[in-house]
Image (cartoon, rainbow, N blue to C red):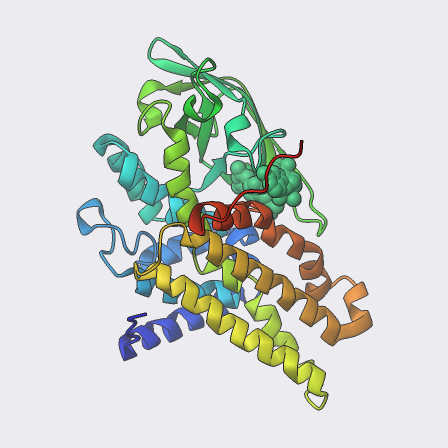
Length: 370
Ligand SMILES: Cc1cc2nc3c(=O)[nH]c(=O)nc-3n(C[C@H](O)[C@H](O)[C@H](O)COP(=O)(O)OP(=O)(O)OC[C@H]3O[C@@H](n4cnc5c(N)ncnc54)[C@H](O)[C@@H]3O)c2cc1C
């Protein structure tokens, strides 16, 4: 891998680390801050520093900076537990999707508010009977004049209760084969007919929600990309969602806080520390390979699998270090309860291993049972 980490890049990382540390110091929980750390105020600070839309073209208001700079900034911010969740989905994948598939008018409408940190977005993909199998989704969008009328239900929609906009996938052609009848829309979360019901997870947090949609009217010009072409567009969006630094650093701060308590006199503990330290570096290199554009197609499946399984090992390690204290309500026990989610959200590890085996390695499929 041809990778140049300059002094400027290291200094940028240090600057972001200090900003992240200051932003996180008042928080009880610093883990998973890209998902549960909501703060409209901190979004504005990110915008002021030019850290939203960092890599987007200057002519749309972006920073025109390198993907490596963005990665270094967010590795430091999320690694410290800074509350970036309010702007994260938009910065990570909605903006890039609008840049790739949106119209000029759509880019003019939504990119400035993402870059200025004034809007929050959620992603309405999963449904009660359509998670791994996106093609099974049933939320229906029906064209009536200048509008689409949307009815259905989404689930596990992170940040929906605070969101201004939802990037929604819905079925527009019920007669087409499952993969071919889906389209994408930007839905105003304040539209009549939108009902958000937060779901409390095993940690007591309620960042994700059910979203019920009942005859919600969406102006026709809020369809993104080509009608019925969503499946192809989603696959591109998933590359943004799966392959980034957020998949490695969710509980980095917890690990660093727990590490001084570890009994380094015990060789078994030293081995686990060595495995985590090397795991972090390997994961980081995998991500950087994608970031600098030197990874093969589909690489994000590999990265997400490796990095999220690593995050689970970090949670286990922290639990082992604090011992019985992991049975009390604290950051370690919260992270242990939360860790199974790492390999579910954004595509489960089983699905990703299928992608790696099937599409990347071309391994033979097991013959169907007779
Ligand atoms: C913390 C969190 C946040 C989330 N946020 C969002 C969000 O903001 N927006 C959104 O749209 N969704 C979100 N999700 C949903 C997430 O994308 C789905 O949970 C995930 O895709 C799995 O779908 P499912 O839960 O329906 O499980 P299922 O698809 O029902 O899978 C159940 C089990 O079967 C296995 N399985 C299924 N199909 C296969 C197969 N073909 N081969 C092998 N094994 C298989 C899976 O690996 C899994 O173990 C979030 C989930 C979590 C945990």
